[in-house]
Image 1: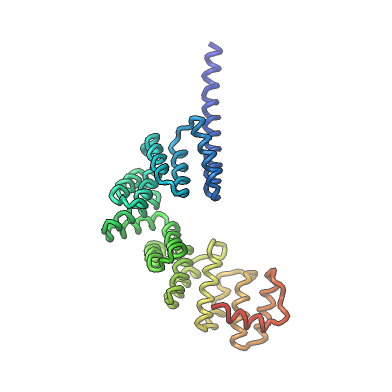
Image 2: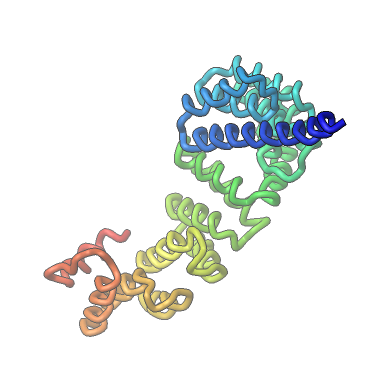
Length: 310
């Protein structure tokens, strides 16, 4: 009786230990994948499979590595096995939809994206995959609805896709479309204001860029990620337009006294306005707050910066 009781107590502890080891290995593999160490990640996952860890997440991440390694056939096999292990693991359906899009099988992509959404309405990616599948089938209006649905769930994800379009495909119009969708659902989103404003600048729409950047600057705070980029882009745009008074009036309104960039813009504005006293004060303050050595001639520094800032 005592031995039987010990076995009852020990077996669950072993099961917990195996679960912890499995989770640790998977987390390590995911970290390696996120850092671009695909071979290391794959080797960890393969070791888990050899140790008979039959989990949907393991084969899902193996499929991602296969996609990144341009091996769609293996990716397809891993995704289908992942779904076999867990028919309700939505990420595998979503990735299978993406894979079908890359293969030009848009009706299957639509099916798998809808299946992923039916299982999990809290992730943006399946909606983007569905939108893409629909648009490739000529269903543009339905696709637009799904892009908006994705933006409501994760505006940063959708804005990031727009940014990738711009950087990787040089698709400015496509990027701007995504940024506009995000603006509709989350107009003060700082990440999108950064992406949208700079894309509009690149498109020559300076006043529209200024409007977007101003929204980002005035509705967010200094300690937020991307604030610095929006701050610099906004006041750089004003500087390009020669609106020095607007800069001097607003450049310190959202930042603390040790925010060095305010003194950078103040110094350049005073230089352009030929106010040497205030120029000197702000230029020196800027260099006091930076690691840059103060140049021998502040005037030459300002002249170069004023010319290069555009």
